[in-house]
Length: 218
Length: 256
Length: 50
Image 1: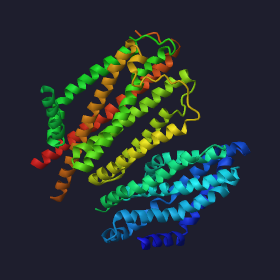
Image 2 (image 1 turned 90 degrees about the horizontal axis):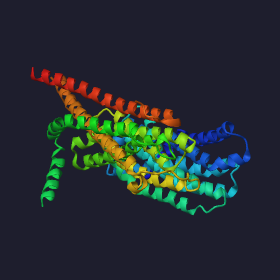
Image 3 (image 1 turned 180 degrees about the horizontal axis):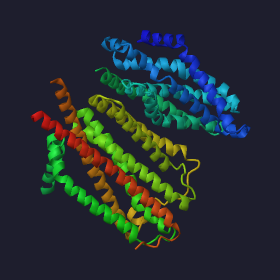
Image 4 (image 1 turned 135 degrees about the horizontal axis):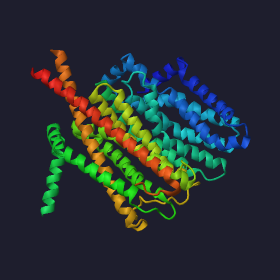
């Protein structure tokens, strides 16, 4: 399992798709929003939490179909299925690799990009923290969606359609926490909810995804 | 004693219907009656509501929209519930009727969601002064619409029927968990800017909120919508069962 | 024939129009697909038996 995890990370780094692409996409979103919205500082501060969370969410979405897609096409997923490693563990390893190459860099970059949107330093810290807690859920849910659309050719759009509604609670609580923090209000409840969603996803989704993988490999 | 044996009989019938042959025979026998009853009740409910109910003092004639809005919303939620139960039963008992019923329920449920949203928006413009507010209830319905869309799209995208049935069922189960979670998240999210008094007729205190002049036609319309849903569900499930049989026959033909 | 709908006549009529149209559409689609599948199945069964 650890070998699989390490291999996935190596592949992501080598192909340049992991760290780089998602981060640059995130940056572009954050640059485009003020251009489309307004350059007014107070208005930007108001929407900053939502924009950063949305940007991170969309950046996460970009690389989802690659989690299983290549392995499914070249048959290595079939090999993994016959190995003693349960498919649930394969799913966890892959989701974890996706998180490490996408969610973690996004969470670390968010407070820096928050400066562009006039987000205060304190709120930036909460931003980083909420993304650290929330992006595991994004990776897990996304990887689950990827197992569902495995057999669909060019399933990228379908994958987004399936995954985005599932992202709703995470987005609401995550953005809410940062929003409250930027107004100087308590933000512990939404943060706990984000954590709860991540933990719940770890608890439930491996079984659903393992089942979906088995169905697809049948 | 009599009622328990009767409910036992119904329960047995319910499980027997999981057999496609029994289902086709039973639904074929009842469908014509059901269709006519639907036309009768839905027609009379809506005609009563549209032509023969008084206007509300505050809402004027827009109160008549309620005879569409509330039944459609009810059926949208029931449709989702049915989709969930059908999927769950398929994963546990592997009987095609249940998952095909779930498949047939989804488009009807989505249409009902759309009607509830549209009539709500049309009612909202004169009453609230806006077509749309991000009220928790409205938002939840919009999210439910997205879940319906995803479920239908996944069915359409996968070629192999049994694979599609399995994967959409997994989606329906996980999706339901997240739909429920979204419902609470949305309530939480909107705490700060809650829209004021929405005259809510869907609360449990219905009879107290609304006088009989409005309630009876509303009840009739709700029963009518329910029957319409059931009729379309039976038609759709029968179509899907036939489609399955057709595919089997086609494969057999090609083999020869 | 038409009841007096007062100042909201347009809204109420549009709401009924849109809803009935949607219901009619979904009924039409279900019935049409039901008919075509039924016919195709009857043909296939006939071919099999022939």
